[in-house]
Length: 266
Image (cartoon, rainbow, N blue to C red; front, side, top):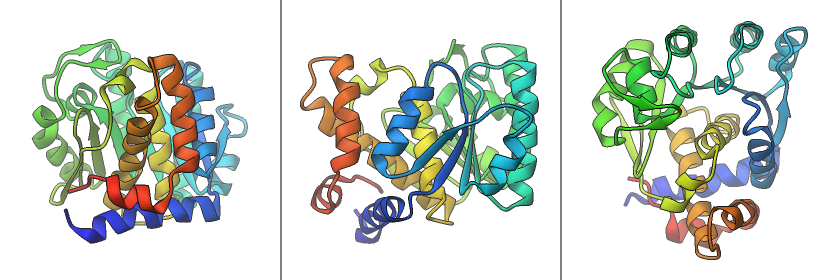
């Protein structure tokens, strides 16, 4: 495993803790508390702001914007458009989480529309990435029916076509800009039993984008940190309830020695 990749995971985590970037989230009702607490635990400053009347102003003063389409409504979609436009005007990097893309026509077309607005990173599961890419891939609500490996080539094509970075999460996470591909092997199966873990991943990608301009590296490092925290939490947990508590503690207490010894990025 290349040492620079592992060194970078710690350096980015350290930078998030030192700079405490403001991460503007337009996210869903299910995960607001989860993602805000995860961002706080990792050292970032979260804001959950979705009103059309203020999203543009807030996006402009943030260090990153995360747009999550989990609980869609026309008003929220309009707010997303306004925030994205403001972020692009202010050169604020933004992340798209196309939750449930492929499940309904409205959700899929909204995800595809927003994906064309120059996100720095699109983070989704395999089925969501396939749907945004316009390729066949069944979904079960917001859960993937495909493996991350199965969507890797589609992710590469999507990244190349849109000029963005695509992060596909699963048993192994893959991050690509169409030419480069990084794989992250950190994580634990119990994480899939906690709602919003993918949404948390997208939020952390936003925090790491605020301190690392290379979106491939930022996404891979954020996913490594979350996966490693999940591993540490699972070692102390009896089930998904206690995992949530231990995950926040793990994000907060991750130290350099642990990150360097246990990060698995290749």
